[in-house]
Amino acid sequence: MPTLTDLVRDHSDLTEDDLEWLHALVSDWQLLADLSFADLLLWVPLRSADALPADRVRRPLPDTGAAVPGWVAIAQMRPTTGPTAYPEDLVGKVVRTGRRGLIDVAWREQRIVREGDPEWGSGIPVREESIPVRRGAKVLGVIQRSTNLSSARTPSRLELTYLQSASDLATMICEGTFPAPGEEPNMVRSPRVGDGLMRLDRTGRVTYASPNAQSAYRRLGYPADLVGESLGQITADLCDTGEPMEEALSVVLSGRAPREVEVESHGSIMQLRTIPLVVTGTRIAAIVLCRDVTELRWRDRELLTKDATIREIHHRVKNNLQTVAALLRLQARRLQIPEGRAALDEAVRRVGSIAIVHETLSHTPDELIDFDDIADRVITMAGEVSTPETKVTPKRSGSFGVLPAEVATPLAMALTELLQNALEHGLTNRFGTLEVVAHRYGEGEEPRDPGGVSVWGDWPGADEHARVVPEEGPGTGRRLVTVVADDGVGLPGDFDVESSNSLGLQIVRTLIVGELGGHLDFRPREGGGTEVVVDIPLGDAQSSRRQPSQGT
Image (cartoon, rainbow, N blue to C red; front, side):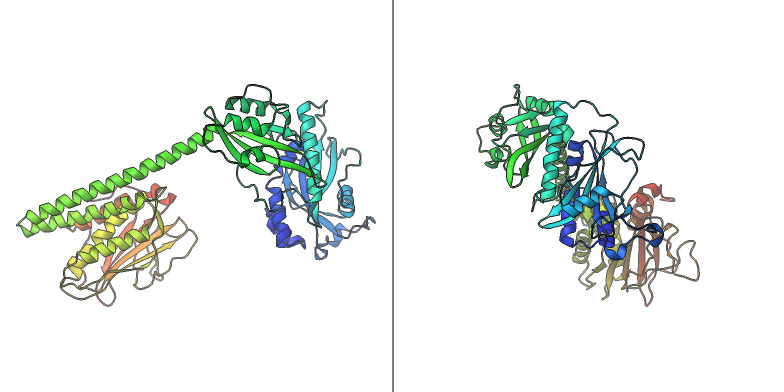
């Protein structure tokens, strides 16, 4: 389905500024549809090059005097306050000049056109009106307002107020004063007509309040009838807590400025939106929409409190892990047995890698982590604890990107183990290179060499004629490939990760294969040394692939 932007750019001569104006209008025209009890269709003129095909214009066009070949519908809105006149989707429909007579007249005469009898084309009576859409001195298009008259009855005071307000808004659209020039498009959840509506006179006094609006103010603590009262004054009195108040509150709620505010009183929170009604340059009235958002705001506050609590928990876990690491370090210094001291040092590094993840989580509002920072800190930590004889400075290339916490923690631990293993066994007492390479690829995207090292080997089920990936590769979800490569002494000839009695390698295999559902491959590096390739699924694909590891 083409968007409004696509239709305007493909079929009309409107400028980008015109397009922005139409976006602002469409973002807020649910208000007009609900007040009118009517469907809205926004038509813009076709450019001459987009005239209808010959097989659709064989009959001569009526002499309407319009300077456009036809119209294209770029947006549609149905009312929530009444039955629709057009249940079918009309966006993208193209008609020639003369088929929608009221639109042609409104465009040509630049006025709202309400003449004509109801139409019965779809089996129900529909009253049609056309409203020119003006921006400055330029008419951009025409709104077709179609009212389903099948349920017509004697209108109540509420309906009469709605219709009068709709008529004022239509006039403002025709004059180019709605939406308010310079006002941001209404993209967030604002009060709707059905939530509660009040109409004010020029002085800011309430001339009508819908039952929902009256109920909302009773929850704020005002039990009397709103009609005849100054809305700005009574709202300021209700919200008077002795603390300085927003100076603009009374101005906004008197109908003099278009704005949204929130007020709180007696444990209730209400969102208010004021729309001044300015016709022929004179502010004649205003409508105020209100909505009780107490539950919504309490939920927001609970979420903020929950987020703060989670961050505090991560902070305390990090502190506790650092305390554990410090105790292990003290214990290691007291040991006289070299093997025991080395084992405790390894434990300190493992605890430290987990602490780094929790420290990062304590600064984020969600459970997503930029893993590049964690990887750099783990790499730096590995370099700092390497022996002076090694003379190796690990480095990273590529990007891990943002990872969820349940992936970041085991990956950080596995990366720590692989780096330490490379420093202890591959690069002992020698100069060398140790590099970590990261590459992500997504669904439908061909894998490529991350660069710097050769990462593509003979995976299980590989095609012998091409570089291949694991069986769960592109086309099945997003994946992250990480390579830890060194140019050290290389792997022993009889090396087998599954039968290795190294605690560190068993930890890596358990984390990558068992917990993350990924693939782990150790192999000789071209030119000497070792490559360890870790391939793990990300996103939804990961949780569905988790399974207990075999042989660990």
